[in-house]
Length: 455
Image (cartoon, rainbow, N blue to C red; front, side, top):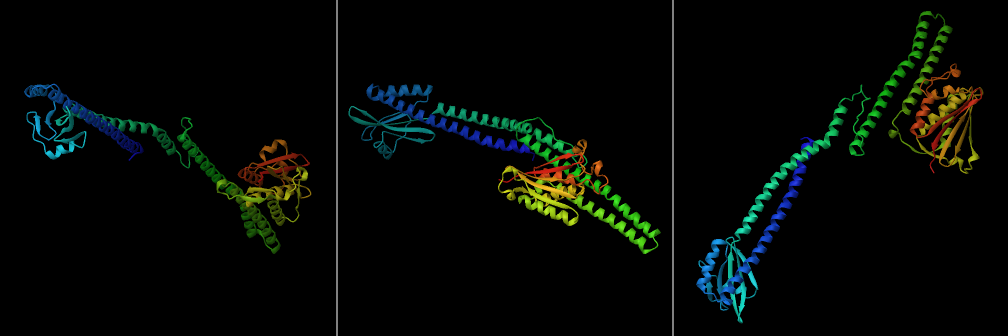
């Protein structure tokens, strides 16, 4: 069953229950008011007849004549009168005898009512000249029952009509409410892995549907970035690995065809080994780049000491290249007495990779192979500065150095792939940090990695 139909049905059943209770309450209260009103009217009629009999001393035959006349015009009550000894004094035509036990109940009550055969009976006291008389009257509330019956028919008709109207109104209302969802469904049907740029657009409103649409669009944005990164990564691997692999294949084929002695084979093996190492370094860099592109929500973060992460990155770089020199210092100009206890919230592996790339770049492009690192803190943020004495970066190239595979002209002769700074930038973004660079030509560069500090 469609949501619109189910919603209309549920709303109709709910409304039908409320309307039934409301209509029943009206009918119940109306019936109760009719009974109370008829009791008063019946008592008035009995009292009025008693005044004719006792006070006015009207002749019995004339009383019966008046009674018969009134019965033709209105629903007149039938009256029976007893004295205090329960002796019958007066009875209208057609009255049946009453049980004496019933009359005894009247002695203890001011008046007593009961129903029988659809008629209301009433027995009451009537004192006259110091004596007690008992009167029993009964009548059928023809007018009241007619009104109640008319009210019942009217309530049933209104109830049925209201239920039908409510069902169709709720159905069209549900259709109207679900119209944006149908729009979303039609929009999403056009989305595929080949068309991830498609987005859901609808009227701007601050409601749940707008939040749903924003959530869909955010999901599509993440999926598009993920697919694009995947395609980009595959194209990168196929492009970058082609060169070292092609060189290895060519070198080995030449060695197979042309080499004649051990020395020539050794040179060919050394060349192929160098190409293999280059491919290994490239694969490691690309793996780090892939890890840095993980969704930050899927990466575990914890409290870390900044100096420990920096020391681990330093050891990682020195283990690969013994010629590099790395100095670690704390900037005491901020007045922080506990510089070594700088805590940040992050992923230890990714931060170590980022710091290692910055240290390696500083050492690689410095003439003295030295990188000076400074840990700084101002209370709210913590920063690590990586200072080198290299060739510097042209101002025009500064906005481009974080692009994947981009290398500045001054370092084109150095070995590298142009991946490291892209990795560092991505890791900084994942940690909601900042990566800035200050550079002076022929004097060196300073890269600063800034993170939020844990108080």
